Image 1 (spheres, one colour):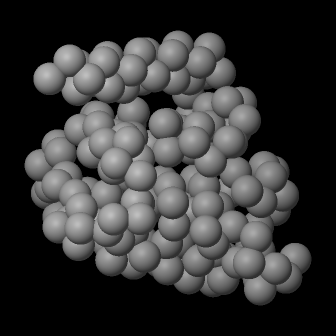
Image 2: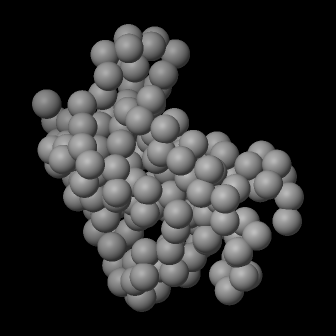
Length: 155
């Protein structure tokens, strides 16, 4: 396995996963970088018990959770002002990011992986959940986000 190829293939996906989790660009970049440092250090030890993508996502999720403990963040994360000022960003996308940041930790991870189009079976494997549990959680998360959008439209 070639680290450079792995990095090129998964770097943006892992960054977006971390961004969905943290809602902070710099912090997401740091966690993604830590993830690929771990991948680089452990690539020779990778046994192939899971797909490479699953293994990398598991490392990223663990790094996100570790960082949460270190920072002792509150449940929600504010969207940085510089992001709000970007006119080229779709306002609905900004709202979606805000609503995702308000979700509980596990739900943020699940929906971030779902948005990256990871198969639900892989999400289940990464998070050590049953596929049925992941399917139900995704459905409930989507309902929650949909309700928030509907409430926003009525304001």
